[in-house]
Image (cartoon, rainbow, N blue to C red; front, side, top):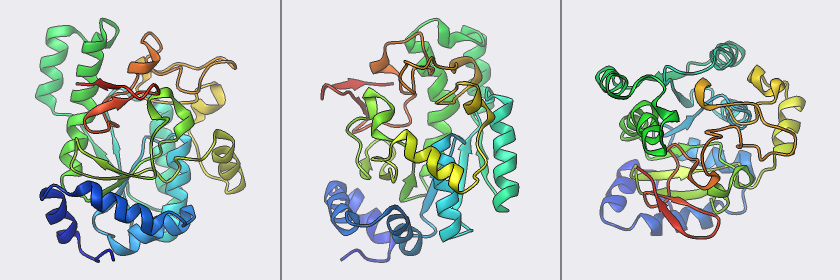
Length: 265
């Protein structure tokens, strides 16, 4: 039985048995549809559960489902300072459409100033290491700070999005951040996502209509060709197996489709 207590979850995790906790929750929620799955966490841990959104198609689907369950759901986004204007427009429309608040998390000013002083504003094109540094300062550190107050964070990851995501589960232990990560859309297809958006008249990022499938920071995102993988437009100059920003790791590492583990950051 899963207790209605965030204190118990914190105690168990710190005692070194988080994976048992994950297995227990997986069994408890395995047969639930997405609405039932999310309702379980919002009703059992309302103050310790939050959605991380980048205003991509998947996140917009999750926002719609979550707000219908609990209009007070915590929703946050990482404002890196390099986002496309279309993303801000989508954020504004989403807040107005659902009459909700979305918290923006910003990188540390001194970190950004030091990084750009030493390597320039577009350092991410210089090497994978510098790109990961930029992602770490602008995204990973603010995320880690915010997640320290949570027990569960909800993400819009899907298995078919990229080789680095083929093995994700609906419920996972996030070793890097010390909490449980929920991937409610893990087994959804791109067609299912857009069918839900159209049927429910959900606001979405205008860049999707311009050939952008996955949207991140403006300098690191481009439109994709019809025959390209849907995350091919993210850090397109890199090897596909290294293309994660550091937010989604398994045991502190990227999980590759070959089953090998690659260090990140």
